Image 1: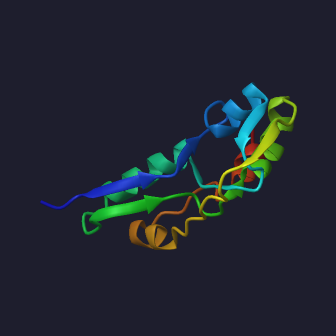
Image 2 (image 1 turned 45 degrees about the vertical axis):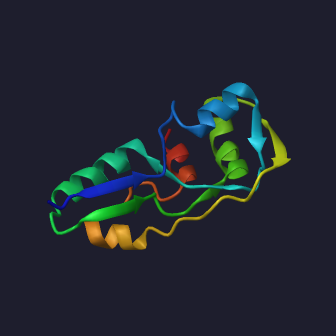
Length: 124
């Protein structure tokens, strides 16, 4: 029967996403230097449309914007824009993973508007 399943990285916009939770709570339980893969809601929806228009794409496809950011980088970018202080960070946990979604972008003929979280913050 075919079809494609897009596996999305963490979704975010100005008000929703891990940054919103961390800044509201004032605490990040994980490490500051751990990697987080994200994709903006608008970019994710554009990728879904691209997948629907590419019937030759099938199976599981991993979708992230491009450059992973650390938890610290995410909070540094969002805190001043949202008027929040930097949260405190924990020391436990692993460093996470950095996804390379070059193949996804090529398969779908799709490029995210925001390849990095900080790029989105710059227009908020």
